[in-house]
Length: 376
Image 1 (tube, helix red, strand yellow):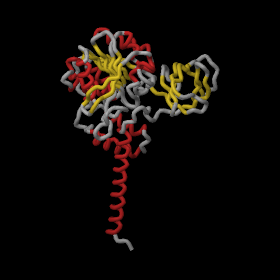
Image 2 (cartoon, one colour):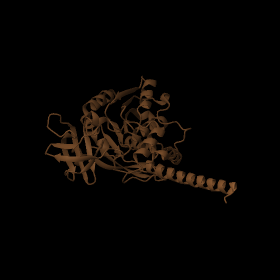
Image 3 (tube, one colour):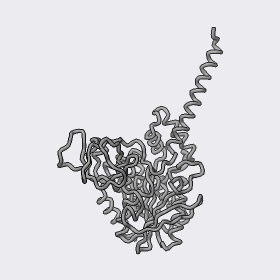
Image 4 (tube, helix red, strand yellow):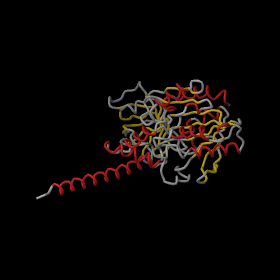
């Protein structure tokens, strides 16, 4: 017969085992949230089936994602295409939606192919994707050479672009034609954890908290090779990197302005979103977030980017909207409200994380033109 002491010991052992398993699972989930996956779209987007295609149209499963306005990449293993807006005046089944098919850049779109919409529209490099001459350069970084594309132009103010979560340096190519038309040189950076760039020492992403030093190195490179001033244009964690450079860099005085697209300004919320998107069981998400914050050094006693509006010294344009489930837009709203003298917030509805250009390319570029004109 079990004694009370034996029963208590068994319960304690069970609880300790369950606690250890939960901690281990939390650490695993944290690694899943922080481990960079270069070139792979963020998980969590709905998979859509291709029903049919013609030379200039594609029929997809009807969903909130496939009904989004604008221009997107269409991604599947071995396949990449570009789709434009919804085509409303064609017959189609009630459970489908027809969009303009702009191009199939890789593979083929057979009926039944499962695809995901992605903000990364272009594949390749500026020459193969856009017809823009460019140079492949290496930016000296603290961990080693950082590959970058340099697209030359006449002005001596350079735009340094830096991508974010779930994309590569191919993502900023969406704005390169616009910047080139306005004669702005572009330095498009790959940073630690990207393909061809050094890995971070722990193999994890830090949501910009260590990666900002690679962007700082890109500013040094630009100034060394002819730039008098720079404008930073960052997406997602790249936007967080840009704010960190403004706050911390010895070269901040050479920055004319900053463009932030879907900025990651709330670590806790973004880590929750990443853990959930990578199918972490709901009971483990709080453990995963705590483990991730600890592993990445994103402690509660450290201020997130943009938390001190008084640290801003240059004009800032933010593109963000209420449909971003990975980087909530409320911190962007607070930052704009706190510094109306420097910060302009352009609200973009119906756009997921990192896809503010995609939802409204013409509106995005017009806002960008107005912002950049006095800074050129």
